[in-house]
Every structure is written in structure tokens, then in C-alpha cells.
Image (cartoon, rainbow, N blue to C red; front, side, top):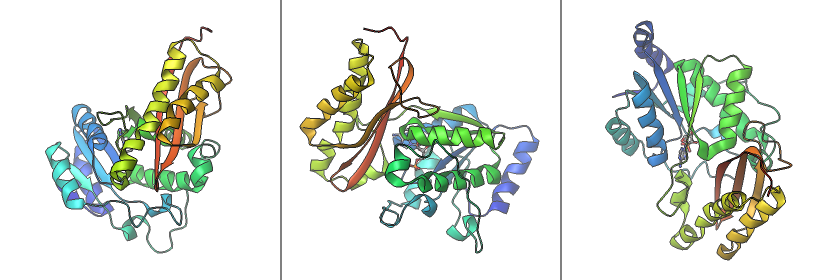
Length: 286
Ligand code: AMP
């Protein structure tokens, strides 16, 4: 496995592979690898000839007062784990490589970046994400890029960006990997103390309750939401938002029919967590 830090080195490593007609897969990450990241790498390994993992904690997607300084970083561990998964190239650029002096461009997707995480963290969070992901797409020119459903809104925003800007990349979104008790794996779970770790299961329980309500025939979004809130209450976890929206447009749904994304965010102690579930119904009312 190669560790590369500059764009010319990355392009030089990929050019002959591309010329040979090989399929290049990119997995963008901020490091601190867990099984969620590894699932993306494994899928890339199965379906691509060349697997590139980018490792860059992107300051542009953190707001002042968020956890940029505290964000877990362990490059040596990440490199070992990536090598074990058969990754070909880890691209870990320096801050100045991604944002050199004079950097002045932002890639901003409208609309989709405003609700949910956009409301909680500001749309600038997603502008930071799309700017760096657009740059990574230009640097690596992958045939396919892999993202996690865990960040469902991010996946929708990136699909929109790639489509709107005619970036010739396929976007593949993979299911959320969870701990045995259902907590969605996240680098931020490392912040949870043992008591908060137990309470953190509230998000998954809420989403499960929403799924069950729909499975039992409930089609009224308010009632599905209430079922989720009720399941979260015993954990003393109150969501910042808990919303039923369309997975692609993130518009609130009037009725639970077709594809619905139930998205939740909550603070558990000092740690902010997000999770979501995709529900598919044929729309038959109760
Ligand atoms: P991050 O390093 O947190 O920016 O995440 C890098 C990629 O891994 C993103 O596409 C995330 O959506 C994805 N990811 C994070 N957690 C999970 C998870 N539990 N299951 C699946 N994918 C995940």
C-alpha cells in the first residue's frame, strides 16, 4: 500500500492504471477508522481494480466551537487497518495541499443543505463537505466513490453536486454499520463516557420504533414521529430534530408512502450524534 501526500504523486500513481482501463474507487474519510469505514473499503476492494482512501480532517466542515481540535486522529493505526483491507493508496494530504494560500472557492449545493444538519450546524457545514469532496473527485478522478448511509443527508448532497456539476463519478451509498446493540458506528462515539454510551442507544431505539409503527400500518408522519420520541424518552435523550423526509430531496413527507428517510440528531451528554433509517412502503394506509 502506498501513502501519498501530494496531488501530483496521486495523479502519477493513478494515470497508468486509468490508461490501462482499470476501475478506480475512492473512499473519502476523516480517519479514525471503524467498521463503518472498513465496510466502504471492502466494497471498493470487491468492485474496483484500484482502491484509494483519502484521509483528511477537513476544517472547512467544522464550525467554530465544534470538535475540530478534539476530533480523533491516529494515522498510524488507520494506515495499518487500511493495508489489512487491501487498500492500494492512502491519500493523506497536508492542510496546505488542500487549502493553499489564496484559496477562495466554495462549492455550495443549495436547498438540500438547509434542513436537518444544515439547520443545526449551518449550511456551511455541507459547503465545506462539498468543496473538499469536489476537490477529491478532481484530484483522484475516480470512476466510483463510496459513502455511508449513516450520513444520509451528506450522501444526498453529494449525489446532487456530482449530478449538477456533471462530475463523471458514480456515487455508491452503503448501509450503516452498527454496534451489536444497534448504535451506529461513528468516530464521535469515542467521546461517549460509559453512562452516555448506554444512553446513546436512544437514537437507534427511536428509529426502530418508527420502523415498527410503519410496519404496523401507521402512515401519518406525526404519529410515527411520536412513536420514535416515546421510545427515546426513557433514555432522557431529546432529539435536536427527528424528521420524516424524502431521501433525495429531504422535503418533509405528508404521508408515509414510497421511500421515507427518518433522520435524527441528538446530544448525548456533550456528544452530538446522528442516525437515520430508510423506510420503504407501498403506501397502503392503515
Ligand atoms: P467520516 O470519516 O466520518 O467522514 O466518514 C467517512 C465515510 O464513512 C462517510 O461516507 C460516512 O458516511 C461513512 N461512515 C461513517 N460511519 C459509518 C457507519 N457506521 N456505517 C457506514 N458508513 C459510515
